[in-house]
Every structure is written in C-alpha cells, then in structure tokens.
Length: 130
Image 1 (tube, rainbow, N blue to C red):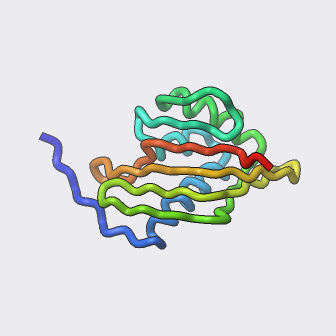
Image 2: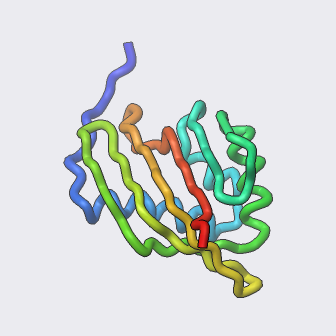
C-alpha cells in the first residue's frame, strides 16, 4: 500500500512558486527538466502547436522545439482556485524569446498533489488573438 502525504496548505505566494519552478525549468533549455513537472499522463494543449500532447514523450517532444527559442514567461494576470489537492491557476502570460519577439497567451495550469509533489495534470495555453 502506497502512503500519501497530505499537501502543505498553499497560499497564493506558494502557488505562484509552482509557476516560477516551471518558468525556471523552461529557461534551462532542457525539455526533460520541464517534462518532469508534468504527471505521466498529463494533457498539454500548447501555445505554438496544433497537436494535443497526452504523455511525457509527447510533452517532451513539444518542449524540445519550444525551448529552441529560449523562452522566458511573465505572468500579466493571475487567477487562482485552491481546491485542496487540486489547484487551478489561470490567467495571461507573455513569453519573450531570444530573437526579441513576444507572444501573449492565456493559460490554465491544473496541479494535483500526487504522492509527495505537486504535478501538472493539465496545461492549456492559447495565443491571444490580437
């Protein structure tokens, strides 16, 4: 029988740290590092791809390409729903790239407490239409 540890109470600052960890991981340029933050059967609806990613291999494949442009994310608007062992973090973020281009997108991260860690179980990111 697997033992589970209850998640620590999460305030807004701690929840923002989950995004900061993800943002730091994408800045390493290492797709495997980013993929480790996702649950093995997570769903990723990515910003710059039409293909839905449904497992670590597909998620890593997306990030290999995405990280080639050295992205750095910045949250412009944040909305948080803390449901205990599920956290939904949505809003607007802007990515800056090494070629000085920027992409503004809406996002939703859904985190779940799995064993001893928060894992991304769903991530949706859509470029803003303007």
